[in-house]
Image (cartoon, rainbow, N blue to C red; front, side):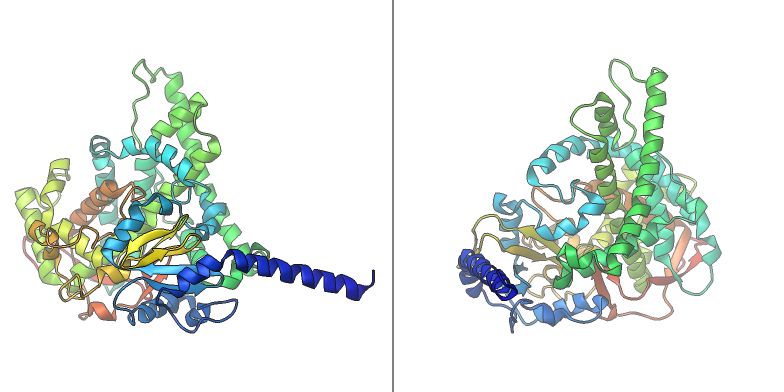
Length: 511
């Protein structure tokens, strides 16, 4: 057989396979054509050309493209992938509760080398088992045990921030991030990491870098095939980041297992079982018993909880501090609430206790309003495994990917009066009752919602209240919310660092 015959055979085989591939997707194409969407759609890349440019500008382009659409669904083609974007709360409710959309989308496969199949990207069958194992450690009774730990780390944060008093604006994120690592490590694993004291942690930089890489790969369709991605510098950088992140996690796990082993040998395990002091103590027990979980699954879940708990709360806390600095009257009202709670012990003579958290109602509303304007996960992604009727004559076809546009939902003028106005009282009970229950979803919703919602709110309240009892936050000049430039690196970020000034609080109402 000569070369031309071989080449012709290869081309014919490829052509036939291509025809079969598209024939099997005819229903998908027909369903997609019935949904209004982005134009033009180009061969092979679909609408991906609309996102060309610097990665930091992609999310802004998505926002601008969606501004043309007043209602959802909206169709987009990302290469061969049919993407359907929703921002109607009723449609989103249907998706979040349907068994046909319980699976995470295949785009999350890019996270597997780092996170494995822990809770974030686990297939539904594994997710159900592991969520059931972890859920009891997030109940309120268990959470209360960690208040002292969070208080301790926040007090360290206050001391470490002292050199910034009366100085120029500085990047608040760096301080909050190290405190958050210490909080998550000690509460999740029961093992201190002391990153605030060491100040040389490689974790934040590795985390930031890998998130940029993963986001870039998700939006640049030509990087989806592993054979192409693995030939780029991005792949090499990703491996280095994962090595650093896994080392951090493995060091913590090693200390935890050693700690647990010593307790067992010291007869700390009684007939009523090991006294659980951290979220993953239940997993530690199962690992030592040799049932239900392997060491690799154990590491994956630690990595997943670090992923979900570190950057998210760090970013939200940074945004809240920015809002307090921009709106001094709101900051004053938060402090007045703390004075009511702590009285003459407002200056730190008494630590925050569990009962205090329920009384921080206005601070809670400030946090919620911040997450409305700056939802940490601006887009949620689900895989559609069966045709799903979302009402209005629209069906999400099997094989498509659905994007829930939390950002657009939270800033919709159809739902929120003057949506760019920072107004914590939107979250007064009587105001919440007027809105669709799915109009606000900073932690997702439905069966696969954020497992650590209560933990996140507790830790954020303690950190913010501790800082407010000690410092006043300011900006050199007022910033309009609409002028804050945003990007997405999976999680929401500002293009420029979040910078603030601060001074020591010397009396009750100094602003």
